[in-house]
Length: 200
Image (cartoon, rainbow, N blue to C red; front, side, top):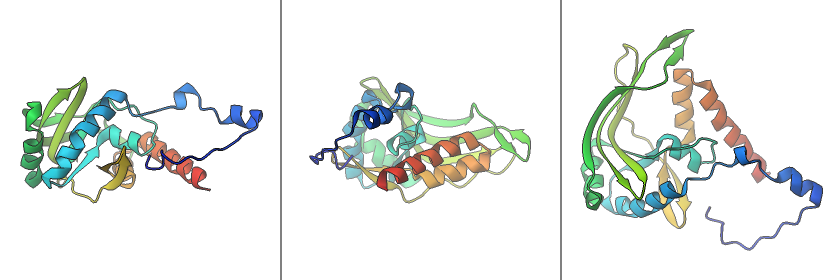
């Protein structure tokens, strides 16, 4: 994304050109409403000084994984939540406290267990894009103890000159493997393979 202004011309013969045209189902761009909203709010959050990161399906899409995000999820810690909400005070976010069961179960040792999430945060909609702020986000499986709130070093991705902290794919892979969601881990592996192929 940061190389979009380079004037590089690559000429392919017709057979190679046809071979490299992606099929419609292979194209997973960031939805325009989500991209516009992210570029609107990210600079404001960056100025707040809070620790934060784009997470959820959108973080994977940004990193080249073939998933379709339906909204923007911003993860922060307890100390950063008030800073993020202050930075976004103009969007009239609604405070929320969430503890709920996810739609998909974990599959561990041939057994299935419910997966729960909880966080304190806020949500709002801007130009059709749903934004959820998640403070001290936690997960748990079945009757296990709640995991520690997530806190990690995000990947920094430049999108239209905006430095965007994004949840690392390695961390998401660990989560998927722990829950037995190997199909999601495989999508990330495919993205890694595609990125490596482009670099060769």
